[in-house]
Length: 173
Image (cartoon, rainbow, N blue to C red; front, top):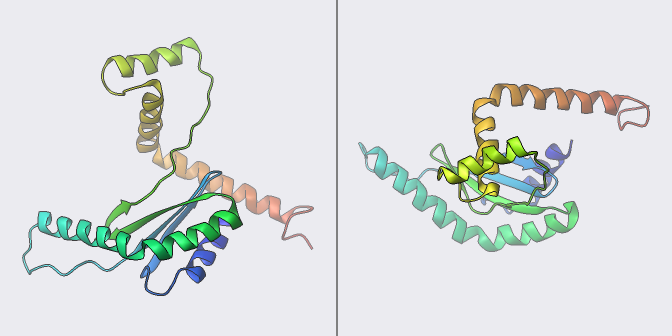
């Protein structure tokens, strides 16, 4: 599995102390996203939620600046090795902060009824363009179909496992 290989590679390649632990590695055809956990900053006892959130945001920003050179050096190596861009994020205090992400163009052909939906979202001010409207639709499906998408992802993992056991698979003897 490429995700396990990537998690191991980044765990071994990042200098000690960059992250307390890597909590997420996500890969697709264009991008590898690496998210690690760091310690939450200390706040005064009884601090408000707003104060804790601001402290966590400050810690994420400080982390981003302090580790930039190390992360970029590792990213350059990973991009050559895995032929994908590398994006970074951090989890602190239960909040995820993304530093960089790839916004990849995706070509699609839509018939008039689908284009009319996108145009309505633009006319209604929900999106600035058809591209934004399509992104909005994907996010909406993701939010409202997460259980179904999780089940679909799990079935794909099982398909890969079966393929690996078959003739020519990596697990074949």
